[in-house]
Image (spheres, rainbow, N blue to C red):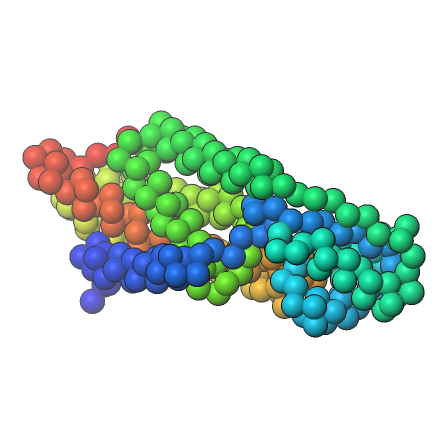
Length: 296
């Protein structure tokens, strides 16, 4: 018997709500792990001048009780950038860290450069991130409205909002940093996820033209999802394997971007199959009883 995606949509919505509410509970309890980009802090650039292990610097950070991120930079990876969030006694902690790094790598003062990131910059970045996501949603809604219909666009936006909330919830549960790479990952997933959703809606439109007088919207949607299911899964898995390889073998700065991408890929595939189409079918089923189903 064929699986009823539309008939069981409430189960999938509840699963997503459990993850989102769990992330919300952790956020209310501990707060989000915001990076220096959002809360302010220091960027410390170090010209080590030779190959080094970032793990050695992380060990020094850990011994000093500092929660910071180390990124290897420079053409020969002989430089380092430390992103350190604002803390009490910031100057003292920073001086102790620089002194420890001087001893470790036999460096002089001219090998260090420190930039302060104020909370105003963090607020601006937060607002710009929210604006970017909302603008992306708005243009996607207009595009799908023109290509299909308004209700299809709203269903697609609901699926995208689901994806963003799942990514934020996962970041809260895993205590990963929310920073500029995370925002870039969110915008990337919005573009990726809508592609899968459009494939489903394309098939819905084709089937509605062929069977609109013989099948309900739920039946049309179920058939369309089944017909595109292998394509959606294969696309998601192919992309997922590539990103997993980057996460496993990449440096720390790459992992900051690829981890939320992995979560977003799973959420996007899930929403395009179990959320977008069923939401549209349930929403439009009653009008379909009065007139033949039609999707422009």
